[in-house]
Image 1 (cartoon, rainbow, N blue to C red):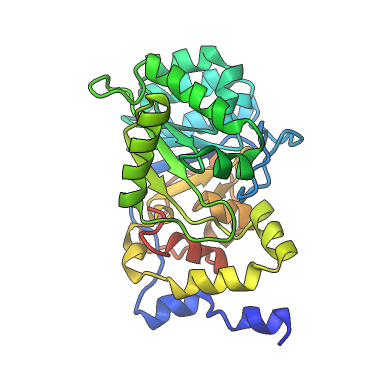
Image 2: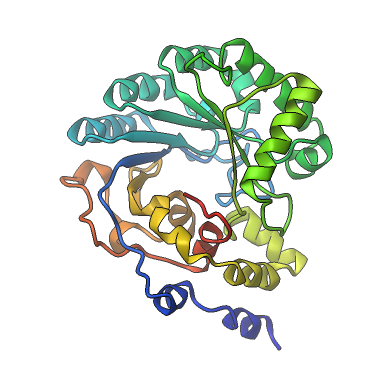
Length: 317
């Protein structure tokens, strides 16, 4: 059987929805997700965007102003800034300080290491009570360094200790620090509850580090991770595992149903994964500067085989 024939054996995601009597359509939009660019200090093997040190695509001030204007037009319950590594985007301080007063919840996602280059941003995060969501592949050095490079584990622990010293992840501080773990390789994530207990115990024992919550997600077969799967001959098997683990109960809580995502160019998507897959919101490229009203509930969301990664196990909600 050829590779194409094997892939065709995986049920298209849209058909899996239909078979379970489901549709993936939008609900009222509550969150604005902002992908500030592809610049990143790391080149992680699981990255769905192929972000890295050589990428120069970052959000310009003009687009940031359009994002802020959009946040003023609409009342978002949360705004989520991601990348790449947001800390490497020039002018991020303007974006954070402008958006924080416009929403009750401002999230910034970080790989931890690039925080070393921007101590002034960490102070701004603390002042604005930004929720930090930090990626950490594992609670041990071998798995973390295998995914991110030699020495990353120790540097990540050092960054977490500095955040704890500022109050982040410390009970009663009001400064939330959450961790995100993705598997190293073509594996599905461990159940979230057990993984959180292990992370909490391991990080406390090894480094005296504390955090608020841990989220475990499957790697999405796009970008650099899809390239790894293809080169290693794991793509078909991984897609099969994802499709076989499809959990219909996750569909109702998927983030794409209640958020609108804008990239560094100002283009609109339903989620960061559809951004990576080149599937724009509404099926056609649109700009945040032209967004006169939020998407109507019931609007269909473009899908692909990558959507299985968000609906396997506990899902990506």
